[in-house]
Length: 507
Image (cartoon, rainbow, N blue to C red; front, side, top):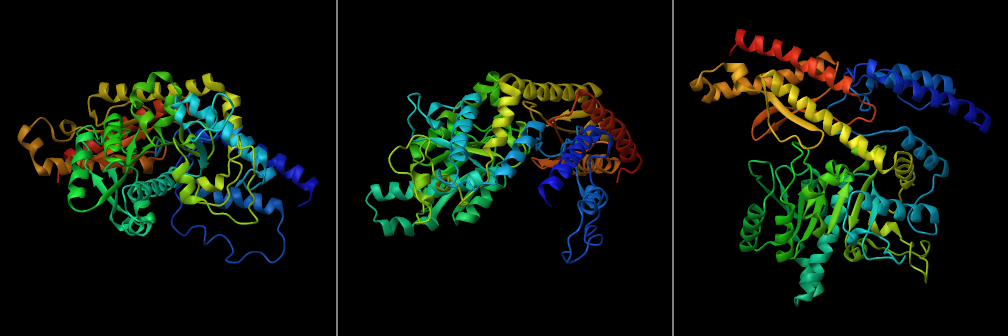
């Protein structure tokens, strides 16, 4: 493809993208493709001769599109949103145009320096403590700072690696030799809750440490008391606590852990405190939510995903550390062909020392486009609109009388179920029975199944404290109140059918 062909087909693709978004709310949000569908439709080897753009474009429409679940649809209420926006798409296009590999300052100064600046912008927008910022007020480089990863999972693993290095340094400062400290790693234990993202346990598997999963309280929170008890038990068993993850907006219920209490324990126990705010961290763009995050200012690392709820295309996950010393020490590798800038250090970061990969793409461009195009006020409007819609959804469900809310609706997530009384009637004895609970769970599982089969809207179910419940996550970029009203309509209609079947077939 030469420049003239690229110019022609590139304009066609922009039109295709615009048409896609324009009609997105009119198509079923969930793919109905069956496993292996694509294998049957495309050749099993790459073409020997070049194929035309027209052929490829046609296959996108007829073969790829049927296998797409439309995350950007206003009718998508499944997992936490994976925001896209037109400014982010344009920023992504510029990134693809340059196609630089960002690993040190020399490889493309703009890629490094824009990341440093825009991550500080974001940190200030969400009210992060100045400890986490890269550049001091006098323009000099601080010990903290941020980096854009691909996912919160990467951010969590990198934080655990830094925490491990910090603990090894602590043990040597207490008199252990380097060899002794290194040999103790198999006794290191990290703490997560039963509501922490699965990346917490996966991170432990990756770095080879033990992971202690702590039960949450009635509000789905990791508490100070529970953490203290777990650490005491592990120390008595000869283990070495080194890391704890607190969550600001869990996946299941958007719960907020006892961040202040966790910070107290982490300080006393000399362990690394990581805050996973991948989803709800974006809400901190609105100052009214800052009190909910008290305690996070004392963390060692903090992560949010602008690609979830801040209008920025996947992948864009920002990790800040208050002190990058242990992170850089753990990940720094030098080679002659990867020269470092000598002398002036402000704005000169070698981000390869801050991440698992040697290099990454120019992700900062799309975040820069978003923050400039929407501005602070536009981002705040985006967040507040979805929270308002979630509150409205909660109100509609409660007013209906057949539903109960299973977790506080704080952000854009509503967790609910058909309540027992709607399934089993008012018999107290029946309500308390195990058989009754099975019927209630089965009804809610059936509701999710019917909603997905109906395919006017898409959502998923989960389990909360052993109960089968329904999750509705509001947050797509171009979703409207009309989409939420459609969601309510579908839920009510299909709930009537589910309850009817429950009474007809109580077994």
